[in-house]
Length: 355
Image: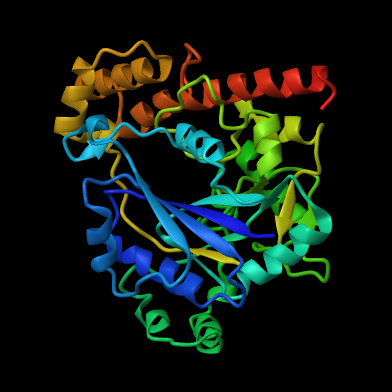
């Protein structure tokens, strides 16, 4: 069995973030994996890797967005469509995970994850993502290591084992004055046994009663095909690969519990997230937004984005409100609205067909 990691390279973040990811994969105690890089920039593939301090020594291939999909420096991207292309090309291993260029692994991550997946055969297993305060500059000591043992010791010296699980974020505990938010946080802590990260266990995973959002997960290839998980036949522009969980809007966790073991959290090794700046080019970049407003495409998600751009330009909404409108809105044409509607269509069809 092998794993496939699908890594998105975007044109917003500092390319130096990739050094930590590549270094952590080079030093894995098991090399039973391959990597697909998805180049969402105008840079040539060779230029990206030649500019890195650390080059990949593992098996990888690179795909890129067609330059016709760029409006200026930035593209109209559809990560769901890309996953379907990889499935069609039979590129993905039995289990695959989609992640971002600012994340990196414990050196025994592949080895431990494979051991759990071989034994348990889960359809979905969350990856144990942790948030750190390190960035592409302060990660420097880790990049100077040359062996898996030195890498592991450096993680301990940096205190990364105390990093919070991604679903908690960096906010202070119980900082909110909203009763519903406080109740949610209490439930969250209870499910994690009053810790803010996932404690390792002998069996290598924990199954919780309720799903608490995490960006990264392994998915079994056949599960994705059986349930049309990447929504072939629909476009999901600007929607990341995550299991959508917004109360009253997109509650896929509740539905997945009906058909498979869910949610399952891997706990023997971690993936770490580096900090970086954010830039919502689809709403604020002058060249991109002006071109998109002129672009003729009969698609509800693009129409919602156009509405958000116009409202933001006219000062009717803040940037945060415009972003939220593209995700969920009264017309139910946001990415999260449609994410749920489309997934329910195929989950219900599979149930009717006896899958």
